[in-house]
Image: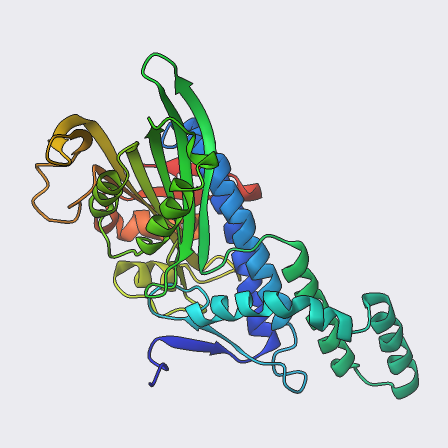
Length: 372
């Protein structure tokens, strides 16, 4: 399969370092936007903390990859990384799969490599004696740090299995409330996606301690972690499969795509904005941040057997949206995180084309300003 139309290979150490330096700053900006969203009452404090966890994991994965490809085209067998240049701007799905595979073998690699102190001493000796750059030793040190990162840090992988956060309980109604969260690196869009589901548990045994239900819940949610599935489909299926669990809300955060004049081939008005905003290095990007929300509007009783009935959630949908863009959700919030230079170009020439898109603008000292 010819992937040259959608994939771009970062074929130099300079390009790889610039790419990961850009993402390091962008992830910090996403953290700031998350905190700002709490103040704007767009997300809760608990949701912000959960997102912060996944952003930290994503940053760890990118840090590991930055060491893996630190010596691209400068050392033999250094390897080259591929990114999705048309749809996401993120590393392609296969890079994340390989990251997970490498993590299972990381300890074996560390046992076969000298420690960092030894490698650094050998590098100094090589420089003094050979008077050349110790590229082979630099590559070995970068690989050492890569495997150390895989062992010591939590990573954002292709599948990040569901976890539970306790919210509270209602003794009168005999129910407990949790936030169940999970994430995936979508194989079709090459974009990290985070799911947060508020669930009421009315069963006699708490979900986290129920060895019969909890594994089934995890499997069911991971099987539904596909961007093309509607939130309504995911929530209704879950509600029907688990009688004692009631999804009160479901949110899906798309952390991308990342558009960059230097690395991607974007289309539409964002292409013109970034092309005209080119100037100082590192200011030619924009990250899309999309939040889909589905909220329960109540319950109804339905037959679940010959003589049984069970409560089922009734979800609030936008009945007046005729475009189909919000089919299966209560609300969609679309936003862009972008530097001030790109924002100025957007407002001066392309504001109408971005109507309805919230703008989070990175100003001086990385301060984030919000414009709706």
